[in-house]
Image (cartoon, rainbow, N blue to C red):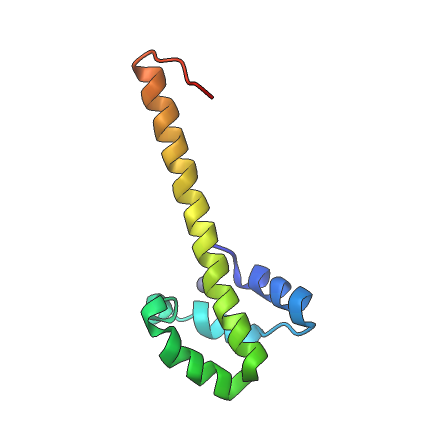
Length: 97
Ligand SMILES: [Zn+2]
């Protein structure tokens, strides 16, 4: 998943502000990190974030969740692609790619 520094860089590019405090709030506390990335809680947390950081902050919060998800998805995709290639190789089947 992208580091806090990477999220900060994305926010800075998008908004001109780093939103460091927000990204640290989402990622830094290991006991609360999972719930702060939980999409079933984005209304509850989104409301809180908007009250504190305004609509732009809300967008950066959602963008953070989105970017983490895409990074995780890409890892899973790589694992599946590798598993398929390994399995085809194991069975001696030539990949159609
Ligand atoms: Zn995160």
